[in-house]
Amino acid sequence: MKTLLEILQASERYLSGRGFASARSDVEWLIAHALGIRRIDLYLQFERPLTEAELDATRPLLRRRGSGEPLQYILGTTQFYNCELSIGPGVLVPRPETERLVEVALKQYSGEGPILDLCTGSGAILFALAGELTAPPCMLGVDISEDALAWARRNREALGFSTIDLRCGDLFAPVDRKDFSLITANPPYVTESEYAILPDEVRAHEPAGALLAGSDGLAVIRRIAAEGLDYLADGGSLVMEIGERQASAVTELLRELQWQDVRIVQDYTRRDRIAVARKAAAD
Image 1 (cartoon, rainbow, N blue to C red):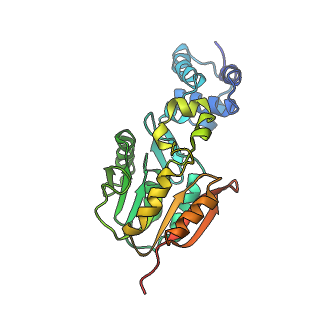
Image 2: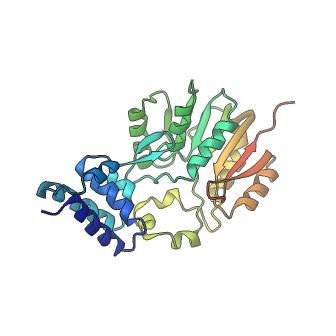
Image 3: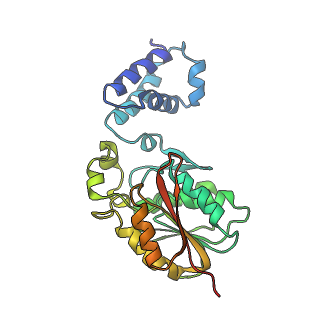
């Protein structure tokens, strides 16, 4: 029988040989998942021989990762901000840079009034905000994809946010109120040329509709910018993720549409990532 350490090393070579830069980390996550233990516990069991049943549980997970399936899909969950989210085919995997959007939104939020999250996907932004607010307000998440919303509903139940409303529709189409204090959005913003060179595991597995937004990546952002003012209360804010090369275009667009206090916030890697703007307060 091979020891856990030997299996870890062999599995790392397997993924490294297929071009995975994160091979060691991926293997640790997958084997810990297969064995039903914490990742840190692997280091306490290096010399333990694995049973055939344990190897049988590990092999298909490694094959799936070796084929390019996202690690989060295989594990079935991912950590985002303060939430553990269920994730799988049909919904975009939340990225670490989007956690910065949550931080910005919390600072921008007045502390009262309803919140709308567009392109909500798994509900990552919406549930992260709810988890940080002492008394969560009326909250609504909207996505055009029923497949994505199925994951959001699963997460809503698991996290205990039963009062959060989730609706299927195209941006503001299913929204029936216009007094939001905060609108957040992580819309599609990848250009066609950028999409063509994304990693194979993204293009082959994650929903293209959650990423692609026309030749310049601004098709959905333009609509949110044009319609968003009508759905905000006076003084309300928009906090929206953008592509790292879109800051100038988005800033110009928002100012032309009479948004106030327009600014761009960088993510943790110092890339322009978040557009923030406000609806003018009533005189």
